[in-house]
Image (cartoon, rainbow, N blue to C red; front, side, top):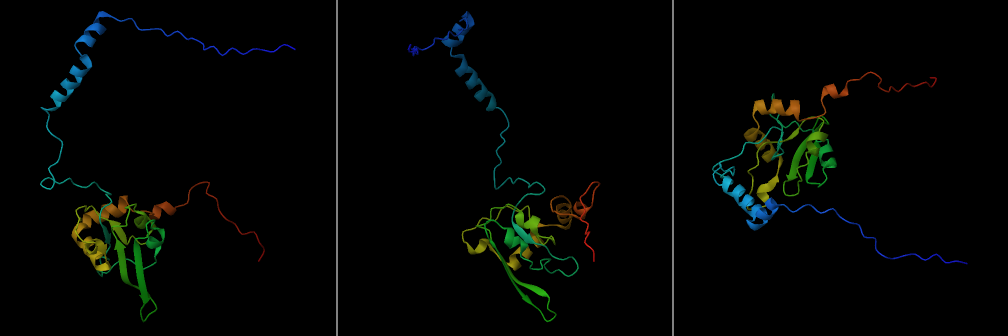
Length: 202
C-alpha cells in the first residue's frame, strides 16, 4: 500500500513590485508626506474658526430637538392635558416617570402628581410617542444643568412651567404637526387592507 506524502513546503507567491522612480526618490528625501500634512495644518490657521464661544454664543436648537420635558396645557382651561393613563410611564425604558392619580366626585381620574427624574431619563422620546393625548413633549431647551438633584427632579408644576417658558404657540403647532405621532391620517384605511369578517352564525 502506497502512502501519499503531503508536502509542507510553503508556496512562494511572487509580488509585482512597483518601479521606484526618481519622483518617488525625491518625495522620500524631502519628506513629502510630512510637508503636505504641515501645509494642510497651515492653511487651516487662516480660516474662520467654527468653534462657538459658549455661553456668549448659543446654538439654536433644531425643530424636534429632544430637550427638557414639559406637560402641555389645555388652551381653553390652562390645565394639564394629561389624563393619567400611565402609558408614558409603562413604556419608559429607564422607569423615570411616576404618576399618582385619584378620582373626583364624578368618578373622573385626576392627576395628583406627575414626577419625572431627569437624571435617569435617556431622552428616547418614547413617552411622547406613547401618549395618546399629546400631553407630554420635549422642548428645545437644553440649558438645565444644576448642582442639586432636587432641581432636576421634575414635578407636575415644574413641567407645566416648562411649557409656559420654553414652548411658544407657534412652536406647539409645528411640534404636533411634524414631530408628534400618531395622527388621524395614520389610521386611514388603504386599498388591499386586511379586513376581519365574522362569519359565525348568530
